[in-house]
Image (cartoon, rainbow, N blue to C red; front, side, top):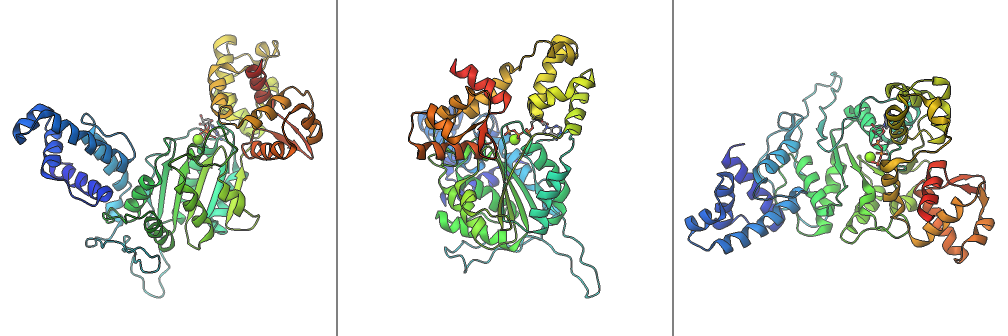
Length: 464
Ligand SMILES: Nc1ncnc2c1ncn2[C@@H]1O[C@H](COP(=O)(O)OP(=O)(O)OP(=O)(O)O)[C@@H](O)[C@H]1O
Ligand SMILES: [Mg+2]
């Protein structure tokens, strides 16, 4: 992008956030930044004090950071805007879209909104078969996952839910490292041609919903949506209109980041409460798109709305089956296949845990699983402990008490047995157990509960 294009993009983004264009000093700061000028030089040129330039610049960086969803500063301004621009127009967006004129300012009611025609659909004669429109992807946030093993059943179920049965809101849930992101990357690759837009956004740094909506509206309108509605409900209506008009697949990875620590699963963080409305509306209202959430815990809206055959569903991901888990261990260079099943069982087929333990067996036992198993330990290691700590630290006090009580039981226990060891009213224990189940942290078999071996080991380590 040349300097004019960078400044134009910055002005568009600034306008989207504030409703105003850049003033002369703000533009001079950006121009000077791109040219490598210091604040003192910009101040001299503009005949004002350096302090004033710094103040204005700092507010400007904050506004631009909010819009693009990452830190923008003097040192990374041009690179960040170019990267952002690239993520929007990548995957041939420009080629796929019809050129249209500038966009209206949006009304505040849902019905009155006409979204611009952003895609060019080939003209057809009556006998022509309908060629599929080319998919527009914004997958800059999606990691590459290779190699990938197994999961054929999971892929088939999710494809059925999303493509054939047209679910509107799907949560793919599971403990950290179980393979949600890897599975979703594979799924997207498999079903992307069914959609007109595919957008992948990570919520890892819990961006305000406004940032996400701005990004989505920009992508879905091919950057024609510059003047976004100021009111949150109007922005949401605008987004819903796109979800109705186009078949979009929107993946929100790391969605647990918008939920609060220290409380039962699914409560929103301060500043992220708006996501609740988005998830509720996306599940309730009719549209032809799908929101796929990858998360350690489900939002409450999904818990409330989900049903077996309805448009809102959740899928709790378990470990890899034996065959793909073996492929993974083989790829990690382990020896003595006859012992692998023990590892797979102990680590419950969790691909991240298997990779971590395989790495240690390589480092210390030259890949010999038999040597490692001689010690009969359930190796956790620092990375695995860190990963579990992140999840354990998010629990409410009662959830932690329930986990501690379960960690001390050698066998699965019933609720009544569990209540004997926890000094909390039964109703609070029931809620905590439900919440732990939603977080995939307790295992249930009929009416008895337990912790999987790695989690038990970790909780014991924490409470000793
Ligand atoms: N089916 C698979 N085949 C091979 N490797 C896999 C598979 N699933 C996951 N992995 C690997 O296991 C690791 C963890 O997977 P992934 O990041 O998808 O987990 P996650 O559930 O998204 O974790 P988190 O909740 O922490 O984001 C990654 O290194 C990934 O490449
Ligand atoms: Mg992930």
